[in-house]
Length: 175
Ligand code: COA
Image (tube, rainbow, N blue to C red; front, side, top):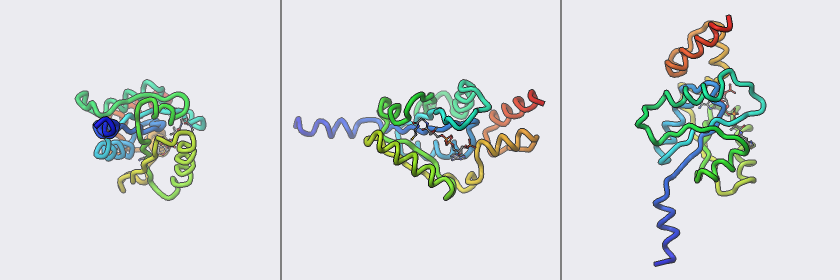
């Protein structure tokens, strides 16, 4: 019986995934990925990570708030956190077996392939799982949303309403 113990523990363990990104700001495309991930995993940790190539418009706290506001307080399967240091180390520490990434188009593939292979090289116990972004959101990115909003364009329906409002406020202040 003792031989089966680790297997039993394995089966009853929560399946946790980390969904990392800059989320500056969160879009409907990101939300679509989170909802899909929730059908596979027991818990999804939306982890705001630092991409050295990006200077975010919104502070870490603002980005966290905007993500949290997408879910009712009763949704305990979604956690919002920040990552400093290596993503795979964070995932391992949190007991996550998987890193979830959304694929939009072929253009995402090279970069995602590189990230996934490097992450696996560092930590073999954490897998990368790719989910196809919903067709409606294939052409959006946080940058394109910010660009449209900066020029007064309508981004309604592409980001949650409260994010739309934040973008409007931010760019009105800048004018
Ligand atoms: N729908 C809409 N847009 C999407 C999307 C989806 N499903 N999935 C991705 N995007 C967009 C994002 O909005 C973002 O747009 P932007 O470039 O205009 O901001 C872009 O696609 C990709 O960004 P994102 O998913 O936020 O990832 P990233 O490339 O900014 O971040 C990290 C990559 C944070 C995961 C990576 O840098 C990392 O792991 N950092 C931690 C440190 C580390 O471990 N480094 C070693 C990595 S091997």
